[in-house]
Length: 115
Length: 114
Image (cartoon, rainbow over all chains, first blue to last red):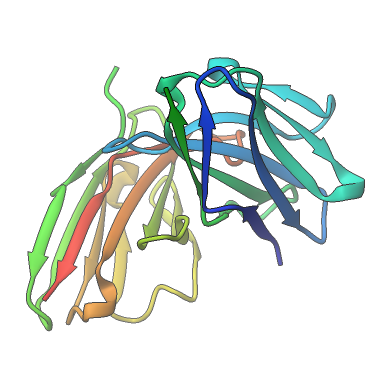
């Protein structure tokens, strides 16, 4: 079984400040890890993903995340927040083996950016 | 470029009525998923189709729920004898083959059961 825990349901940062959204996962097999973003009144959109290889992955809009197996974490960061980053962010895990295609999502973290 | 579209976007119904949601995936995507999202929660997996075959179903999908994808194109999700606990956003997503977890979501269909 796999699960995702996102620490902090709501995070506020000032414009220009570092964004750090935390995600820890539990998986009995090597995971595939994802961050999705949901802007108001829009569908979820893939921000970045980790499958294999390089543990630091870069996504759209200047976001990146690092897979740390020893810490079972996949935290999302962005050096400088922009007002347009205000949205809800979901971390998700998928089973890397054959036969299962479902994503397990965390509860989400709502990011507010203060001007 | 047309993304995933869902219809209706909003549905208000009385308890005990049946409702049906439709999803039109991105045309070249052979995989289609239904998720449910309630307030304060992340999306929860309901079911998955590869072409017209329903390959995976969550235990959340009770016998009042049925999903189809005839001819491997659009999909429908029907809820029979709705209950207040069915109130949620129903999300459809599609993906191309071979890219696990890379889903393209529609904007969702919000169901309110009175």
